[in-house]
Length: 136
Image 1 (cartoon, rainbow, N blue to C red):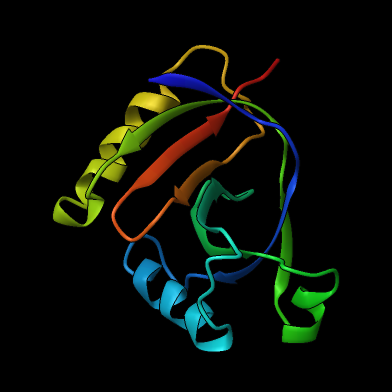
Image 2: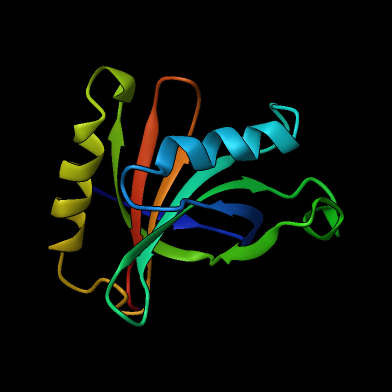
């Protein structure tokens, strides 16, 4: 595990999965269907517990320009800057369960933000950085 500082907020727009974890791939496919993939933008998965304690998941893409989310009719979200605890998973597609295991470790780390969320930052087609914000 490593500490990682996200210097600036990241504005994203999201497609919410109909269920967790079964709806994750479908949410990413829906998001991909409304935007063209671009190396200009970053891609994420965002999960958290709602008021009822149920895990919700959003496939997310970074806004390239102000108002893009509204233009596409998507929900907006801001990934907050700050310090995160993280784990890099290389070639995650060969073992998708590694993401679950990474978040189990990260969620047990002392000092995580109790109001925070779990972030999957898809660095490229093979690697994902799993992150949980620290409460500083």
